[in-house]
Length: 234
Image 1 (cartoon, rainbow, N blue to C red):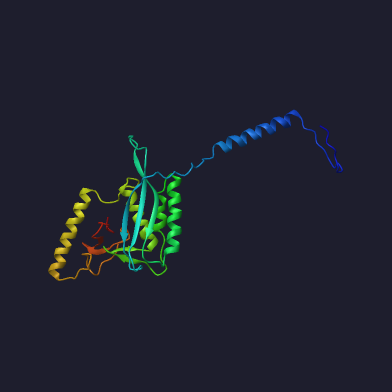
Image 2 (cartoon, rainbow, N blue to C red):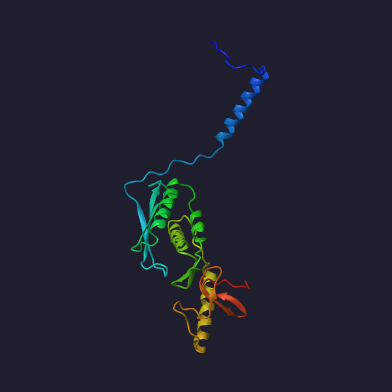
């Protein structure tokens, strides 16, 4: 095939066999590198039936309760590797104040669930969101930094129930020691007439940095949490 050159030739170079060999080696290296790239699989398809749980949360920052539904898909059903993993999440409430961002959040989270892989990172991401107004305390005396963080706690609870996250807590002996210390302290304060809050902890207790519960008191010369047993003295 003849090609007519319309423009003026300003330079040229000869290609030898070594140049061809170098170009072929470079192309082979590029193909090898591209083969190492981890490709994310296609999103999971929605089965006709899903199993799930619905959680109710009532906060002081919303007029009505929020109902969080997390549906799971059963993987490898009927085998030894059978397990549940979250597939989609819905949040329903009569309160329309947060409707827009809640719908956006649940759609993004559902897309992450369907993509597969490790989805547990969502828990820490959600729980690290802080409300500029300062957060609130929920029933039980636990401090919640934001409504988004409480949604993260619900997701964490669900992942623990289906086995994707390990439930934190004390072992049997540690729990027994904490219960004994708490009972001892409560008996002393009952005799002294100290008032307790609605959650059963002393009114003057401060917030525990570990469990975020307002249950830290001075015991035996150490700041000790009556809820989780955390102590500054170890």
